Image (cartoon, rainbow, N blue to C red; front, side, top):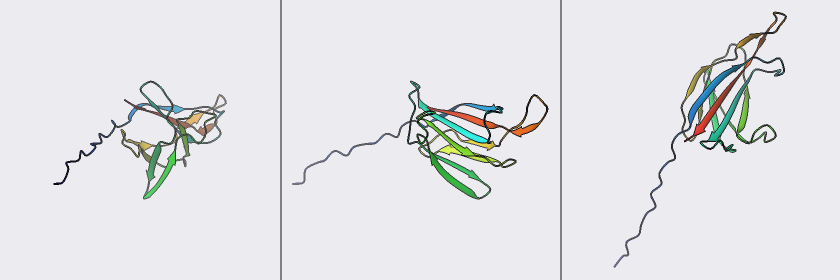
Length: 123
């Protein structure tokens, strides 16, 4: 007689939530970066989180944790001026769309491309 076996039931974790999205105008950042920070609800930095970014028929994947000297839950992507991007975390998240480098101005009135900072949190 065959024995009954119990199958493990996996409950997917809750999706990440986009907590904040900020434009960063700083002459100290020389490139138009899309800066992504990922943490859990206790603010623990989460390395190894896959991020998917797409634009005009293109898609690229990158990961948090490759610059631990800045933050273990940090990743960045170099944006092209006047390009619009959509971003989500591979394991499920709030989608962020229509992302683009903000046009900034220094104290002397010169224009430059700023950065975006997105903060995701896992509940």
